[in-house]
Length: 313
Image (cartoon, rainbow, N blue to C red; front, side, top):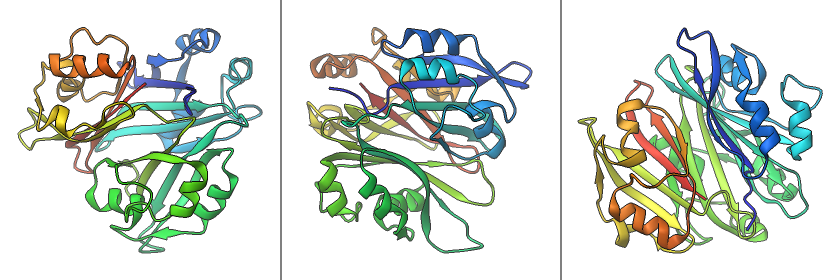
């Protein structure tokens, strides 16, 4: 099954904070793009990661040629046509930039959307940009709708200020674009806040379709106020369904696997090595046939870690 996202990368600040350097990535069989990325660095405002750093907001770049994108030739060779960047800020401190890349294909259906609210202009959240693959009708309808706090998936993420997995079927109050979702065969929707811009609130939503999922499993781990533990809050897996029966109220400390270590580092991570995961998690991942984890920390405006969003492929 082809993933809607072909490449995921993590870019981290250099020791002196003057540039972004390659941290880690998941490239599948796109070895040429991997090699190019591994040798690339970005200054402030330079390239897609540098732009996300400078603007302090999520960015969608639909033209990787003839633009500020630095790896255009390598992207063309790999068949990549769209890039998205999510900056991870803890207060005023940039922790990392996560980039995603997609490829145009008649079979690719789904959506990655960027929503924002400017309180000086409106009390609602509107879509600012997005990548929709072959779902142009979904794009048109998304641009025509607004969400207040608590309304739809963007509005609920905005209100709760934490990642959310939509587990209900198509009629959920969390996802108001039911007719459009049915047309693309949407199976899962995931939303997460993005703080960095002091003047506006931002939310990214990821909408999976049956044939080209964003990920095969989504999890949300809530940070306890003591800053020492993450508690499993919600999750949805293609194989195991709702993970509540599997995980219950599982708690992770700083020494507990890849996700637990984010309590210590505060950095996003991509890994294919599950050998050090807690036994309950590693057993569940093996049974579901999952091989790659992308884990992203979520910080409040006050720079407190509030949650970790985890995706598996």
